[in-house]
Image 1 (cartoon, rainbow, N blue to C red):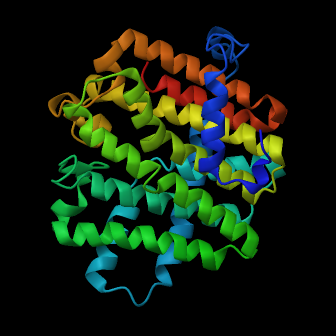
Image 2: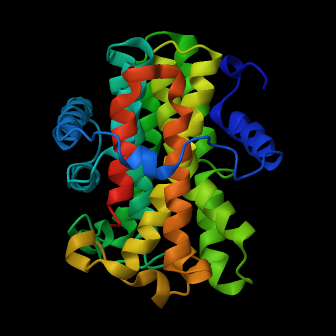
Image 3: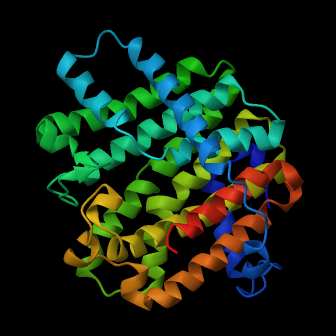
Length: 335
């Protein structure tokens, strides 16, 4: 693989996908899922995630406090969505990846964590709009366009997206690192990344469902942002090539698994449990793993991805235990 230090995450993902095509899918990971399940799971993972979520909230609050020129109603809508809860998993991935690589959390990783959440939240605001998924609930409360109006919601999403990159360009002190981070995130979230996945997802009900189409949707819509999160943390921590490659693979695998979990939960969990309207995928004829291959096969694929994600972290030894525990916790969401 070419030197990852000089490549943005999108380029690395393309190389990574081409490499996987040459592998036997049954031999990518030498470990079995049962052996991973037997690993001791720390009861402190949820509290560790809560700590990272609280830190992210504080960084976001500090960033927003300094935004004195945003029109009041627009700022209210942006903050309404940013402070409305959420698991902050992507932010935690940024910070844990940095800690795994360097042994400590630094300023750049904290900024990147907040920025990732801003980009993620912008995508949720736009996803919920009537022209897209048309959902009235998000994070257990009215969606942005229901709480305010459609125009304000669109502009709030636009504001979060552009403010995210402004903050990264200002707050990341080393200009070379800032450029690498901005390129990594913009390619993962842009028209050949997350937005491409959203387009394909919207087209899903109108095209013949195939595993290739489904994988394209999940890879672009969800997994690339997870990979960008771990890549940003690794970059902030000064990762060498091998470490960055491993973090990207881990992020891709748990990102794909996370979307499968969402597909499963959409048909097994309640609206109250999800914090958004349950059953929307089936109602809209979305292309999902349960719809295409069934629940049982979906769970098998999810378990395999979890196994491979954990295996990707072998080079970090015990330093990556929290990331391993997170992978297992995400798997347990659907149990």
